[in-house]
Image (cartoon, rainbow, N blue to C red):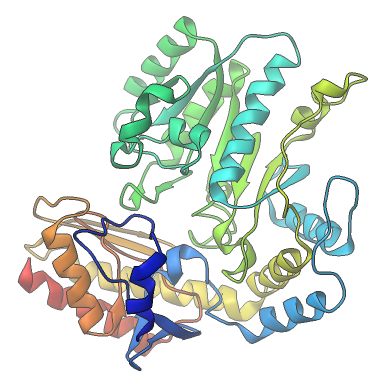
Length: 421
């Protein structure tokens, strides 16, 4: 019996309607940018397996560092102990994080990194006997699947059944270079009417919304208003972090820096799960007290897992290398050239790129999870490329190590797919 047939007996997959999509493809091997299924078919991983394996799958350097760590210290609870990999990772992260990030809090995944950030913001005011319970967030943002993260997300396809159970959030449009005054007026109205604790945002690129890129000057203006009204700012860089936008973090493009940052995905190069919520010294200080209850009582069993920390340190070392930085520039330039070629195609409504991220919107209406989307997904896979459309958006976010030949194949398959739309 094949793996995919055995899978159907017991496994419930995420983001899947099993009655309509009964089978999942069984992958048995991954190396650099290539996925191999149980029948020996190969696929270029054009989205780095949800933007995680940015240095390529099963990167030898990262595996070696993790293997060495496994032989010395595998897991230890992080409430009462510390260890060299966690300390070293924190030191290396602080070197590359935007100015003002001073403390590192460890989590399990992107959703829990956001959850911790939301709780930090709420308790920051609670510890000072201030009642602030409302958040500001962008329309169509996505921040994860735990309850706090769902609350600040704006995609109803994920949140619909849970809307009655979420925290209070007021939404504003993303800045596009023309609507700054409108957004700021709406923001100021919210500030006058509600006790706003924080503003959470995906800096520059909204991933799950379809790799939508917004205006950095407009975002900076929003952040300045928030700072002026003592509203904590939370940058969700789970998707954008670690070089994907062409800089270490998307926040590096923006003058006003966040109070809190959420990191995961490429943090551990896709090898093992881990996440981090970083914050300023000001926020950390608000939790210092002779009262035990004013501490931050949020914990995960695998917080700061030593093996995950070792993988993350190795990933940062690669990110800092000339080879990876050159590759980021090379892929960015290739996207720029492809965009020039494809943007005027009659089937393309809009296109955009930043760093290693490229996206186009098809000039047709599509369900986020519908027949045409499934048809496109099959078209790509049949031609040996793993691309996962987000509704009418086709996007690329490859590992930095992808070859020019593999990039050309991805571009050609996308062009060919326009004929079936």
